[in-house]
Image (cartoon, rainbow, N blue to C red; front, side, top):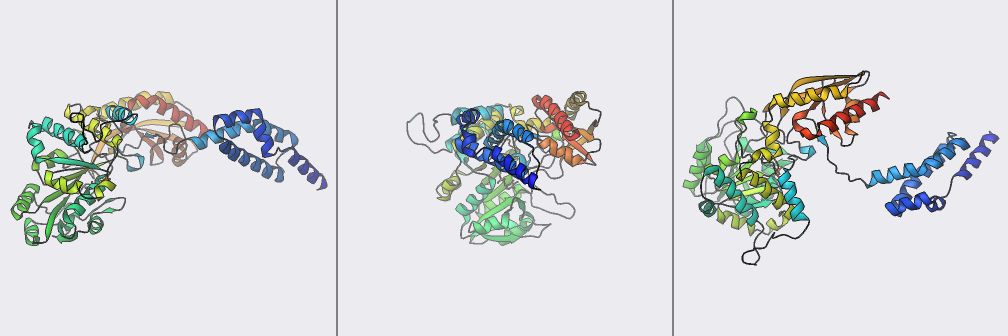
Length: 483
Ligand SMILES: *Cc1c(COP(=O)(O)O)cnc(C)c1O
């Protein structure tokens, strides 16, 4: 007992003080590279750990010396780890194209290029280069979106600009809120009971309406609302008719919902503006991808309600933002609302959004990752899975290529699934959950899913140029688990 005590106090004396540690040349170099505070913090953690180990009787003089010799390495690794950004890019192998937890739509090359160019210097964000005078930042979205619709409908942009104006805000939830607050505060908004939906993340239409200061006037029933229900609800205090796209659920069976054009016609005759929360912002047909019945922004545009709102980072495939598109006098009311300042987006968003729209205007929508991933033929995904399979040969790892369904996600196209292929992994004597966790610890982290005791990695949502890296990550994760 006494011997042990003597050994312990002897070992404690071998431990350097913090000052001594930080004066060592290798630590001075580390401080130069990072900061004194960061190195101090990490070194202290190591010394405290060593003290605790000595107290537990883990160390001999020799093992303690080995620890001290290697301490700079441990501290360097800890400092580097702490300096790494918490938000990093990951490989999405879930097959969910618009994965809300993984950042929804990835940006196109053109959008990234625009962000780099506009973000690294000054820009004409609120400046007219012709007149040399101030101009509203929404000029950038108005012109570009009309070029898109002009190219899709053949109508000249000049004619369109008389009927349509637009604005960008933080997201579709902000767009909807701002529209309701600007156009219907203190008045009534007519909504079908079948459209009083929750979009996700706490965005509930009735709550947004209440917060906007508008009075909700519910019509119809959950499953059936008729045109006459709307007609009967219009009164002198009606400020708006709201139509919400049922984007994240599907009603089947005994259901009825008025045709949108008929509802628009009713609104015109009642002299009440009609506002559609379209949501997805889809500009291309998804029929090829096997997705039907999905409303599209183009469709809404052609039907011409007075105002439309949609997300920038759902099927449109741009940055996170909300687009408001509608009659110029309504947009004027919205932009003169003091709250619009609170919801405005910065130059990076305009740059990325306009670049994304340009790909549609120039009929190069295959350059938009979301669109490309949706259209990717399942045979192509299968070929990539098959090519990857021999790269991950390991005795303990069973690798198969299996057919799966990719989903669109992001609260769009419920029930729609796109045929795809995945690599299925099963590691001997290890659960799928453990392998899944090991994959998340790779660089870049790989996110997959578990089904029937196997890890499934759907390649539809992995950019093809990352297939090699994915193969390495799988090998490393499996090896780590086998150790
Ligand atoms: C997704 C969605 C929203 C919310 O969009 P965010 O951009 O996430 O704020 C609102 N309305 C509908 C119909 C939607 O589909």
